[in-house]
Image (cartoon, rainbow, N blue to C red; front, side, top):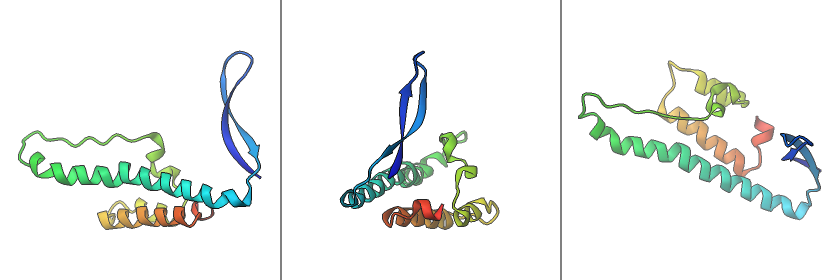
Amino acid sequence: MAYVQQTVKDGRGNRHRSPKEIEVKPELTTQMVKQVYETVEQCLWTNYFGNKQVTRTLLPLLQQSNSARIVNISSTYGQLKYISNEKAFQKLGDVDGLTEDTVDEVVNEFLEDAKKNQIESKG
């Protein structure tokens, strides 16, 4: 059995999230893992690697301006406190020693964990 979140309405029309038990058939597990990996990969290419590439591309132009600004907007869940993987938390929390290569390493490890269906077990 597995649990998924579903949104339900109560008698007053208020929405609530509640777990719903579903049966997971073994033959579907591989497909589910593949879908999770593809979703994680797409998300990272959009929100991390894409953002990084746009910044690299625009940075030379921005450096020519006296009032250039880069504004990054993220969700609440982008905060470090929501990272449950202790290794990733330690690496990303080292503000003085944090490098682009370290962030790339953490992101790529997360992608590998998704590919191996180890996101939950590694935190």
